[in-house]
Amino acid sequence: MEAVARLNNCPTSPRKMRLIVDLIRGKKVEEALHILRFNNQKESAPRVEKLLLSAIANWGQKNEGLRPEESELFVKTVFVDSGAMLKRVLPAPQGRAHRIRKRSNHVTLIVDSKVANKAEVASTTEA
Image 1: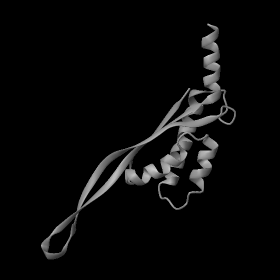
Image 2 (image 1 turned 180 degrees about the vertical axis):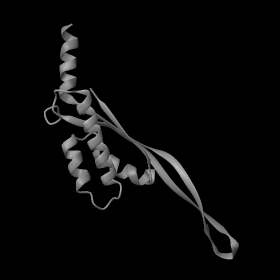
Image 3 (image 1 turned 90 degrees about the horizontal axis):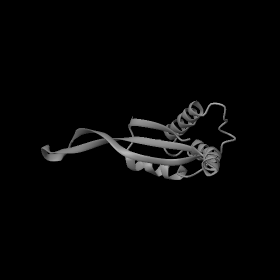
Image 4 (image 1 turned 120 degrees about the vertical axis):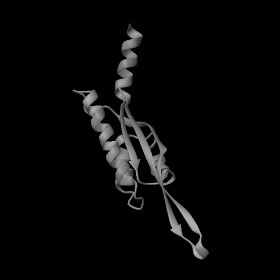
């Protein structure tokens, strides 16, 4: 059974967030957490790490009695959409103005278990 976690209106540009998200797509949860924890150069890594921990907790709420360590959790899907854009104006030479677009994004992360999928497949083939 899969679990979803969402991060809305994160004040980072979607392009910068996708760099981090691409590193963890399809990886095991433990490996993804290590990648995010030790990626200090990127500002968005701690936010995605917190989101991944939230997805693991959501999975634990849905699957009571199962432990995440034994269930071989992996990052099934993760994607970044652009969010609201704040538009600002910066003074420029000769009375002109330059527009600044402060971008934000929405991140959706889905975690799934390989062990639970095997059990579901086995039960459907028997029936």
